[in-house]
Length: 182
Image (cartoon, rainbow, N blue to C red; front, side, top):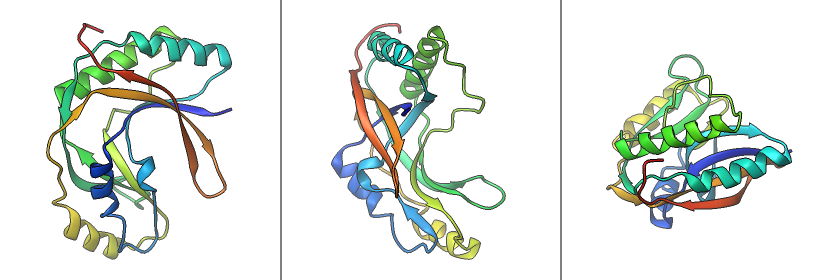
């Protein structure tokens, strides 16, 4: 059964800039540029009826388009052995509103809220055996990464299935942003 998530995609130009960060760190398993996205909400596995409800229900999400900037690089967890390398997302009222409306809509379909705080980021790599010293050097070299504000005009529902080497993401539905109160 595929796992679902809701995400914002970026332009090829932004993905190209992100891909330029994907080198010089032994122990990093870099994501391919076509998988760069900002996850708004991980949903998980759902049955066919819930899938149809979610797909249709997200069509009613009404939020205006907004701008978003990426800034900085870090890792999860912040303490202990790093497992994920990420690019940060500048705080955005529009993104926060969209996240809230999606979260509210999913709860109406019986999807339990996530147990952790929303921490918007773009995953660059999974880390396995990356030395803390080399990671520190990488962060010092690339920590000033930033993009200009980019227009966000929609979001997508994805399914994800685990492949032999990486997850395979499939677009299930695309949703434009527009006016409204959600």
